[in-house]
Length: 287
Ligand SMILES: [Zn+2]
Image 1 (spheres, rainbow, N blue to C red):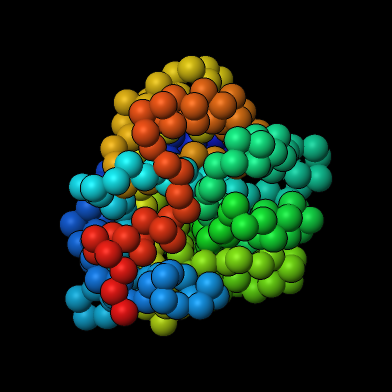
Image 2 (cartoon, helix red, strand yellow):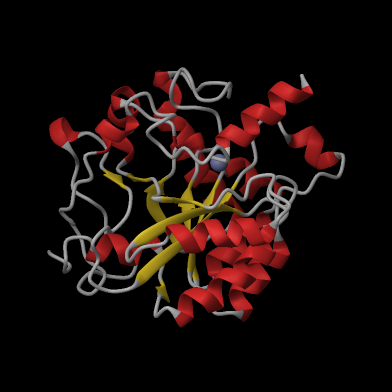
């Protein structure tokens, strides 16, 4: 039981370092990263973050990275994981939040995108509100339940197709309830697992799915140097790095960030939020 639960969580956190293609049942081919930006940060109101145009047949578009970006930008993303059935564990003292990590990002002035589950916002409304009120950050959607959107995602419980859209919308509702501002219409599939059916089910939600090209390997890692090295080895201009904002499941992340940030800045990288990468993914924003 413990092993299964732990395994499921590790996998959901993307700790196996396999990226989306190994867990999405064709996620790679379904990725068809659309490059058409339908709204732009420069010309649109701040309340309208850039999104990608829908894929073929109106499918939810998928953004992985701004590969071949001519400028050295990199987006650190942090999944604030908490599964719908983990309330008792939080009540027993397990920490699914990571205030020290958020404090470090603020101290180092690193913009970041936090993919938050609705359940996390329910548990930590003050922290969720604080992150959402800080212009350094943007809050994106990581589902309400953190259950899987495909039938086979590392043993996670699954969301039935008929409830996929409502699970995503329920997370936005939880953000509103917690008073979170600066939410963006981006969605990260739990475990990175998705297929055509899931992309179709989420079309009415109007989100852009966001994957990653760099796996930090921070889930359950205790060696922050190894995590930092994996990030430094993987980052290219326009990269999206997946990390976690969940103390109990990713205890080395804050230390790894402290190591990574100055080194990437030395290499000329500028940290950006995912919205900036999406806004420039087409080379320049378009209307
Ligand atoms: Zn997650």
